[in-house]
Each structure stands twice: as structure tokens, then as C-alpha cells.
Image (cartoon, rainbow, N blue to C red):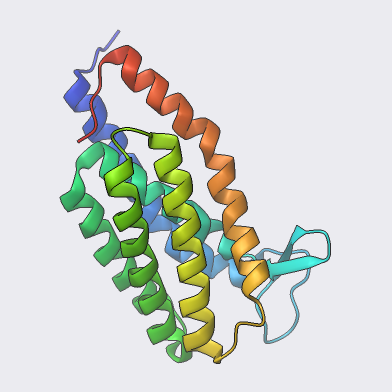
Length: 190
């Protein structure tokens, strides 16, 4: 049996969270064209996020990105959290359709830094609250900035917010598990 030191465990988990975070952006772009209950021509594929409410399928992975960035910061530190934001915005700009590059990169950068500013002061005392509060603020900012810059309208705001919120809420049991396990193993946040 291989045993890991707590520092090694934190670094390995942090690296996994960082890779998953970076994969959410191309994954979200791919989902927009391939995953949904409805895929209208010349439009993103849509998924139901609540009764009578549809959203572009990519919002699900963007909601996950908000949580994963928090976990990168918890495991690898503030510098890696900031680096992940910059890398994510660059990936977002590189993979977005030309007409959406500014909206996509700006929304990603602004929402992730907003998430960062809420998560950072709360994380050491109340991890689950920090993830939920920062995710909630980040997903609203991401949705507003993207929709406004891309389309000059907030018509699809509710679907965007609800879709991302589901992913943040689905992550809560995992984040609570990590917090309990960290306490049991004596792992301290980076």
C-alpha cells in the first residue's frame, strides 16, 4: 500500500482539480453543440434546468468551473487560484466563436475573480458556505456579463443562473466530505 504525505495528497488533488477546471471550458463549448434535449439549428443545444425553463447545456460545466476553481485554491493556494482564472479566461477566449470571444473571456475573468473575492475570506472558517456563496455570486455575475456583452440583453438570465446553480448545489456534498476528511487527516488548506 502506498501512503501519501498530506502535502503530496494536497498537491495531487489540487492538480486533478486544476485539470478538471481547465477541461470545463472546452467541455462547455462542446456541449453547446452536442448535448441537449433540444438542439435547434444555428443555436446552442438546450437542457431543462427547471420546469418550463431551458438553458444552453454549457452552463452546467461553467457552474462546475466555479466550484473547481475554489478547490484549486484550497489545495494549491491563492497563486494557483489566480493562475487558474487567467488560464481559464485565455482558454475561453481561444475556444469561443469569434463573435463571442470578448463576452466569453470577460464574463469568465470577472465572474471568477468575483468568486475568488467572496470565497477567499470565508474559506478557512466555513468551506461549504464559502463555496456556495462564492458560486452564487460568481454564477450571477458570469450570466449577466456574458449575456449583456454577447447579446445586449438579459432575456435568458434565469435559465443561465438556475443551470449553474444546480452544479454548485450538486457539489455541496462533495465539498462537505472534503472538509470532514481534511479535518480527520489533519490537512490544512493551502
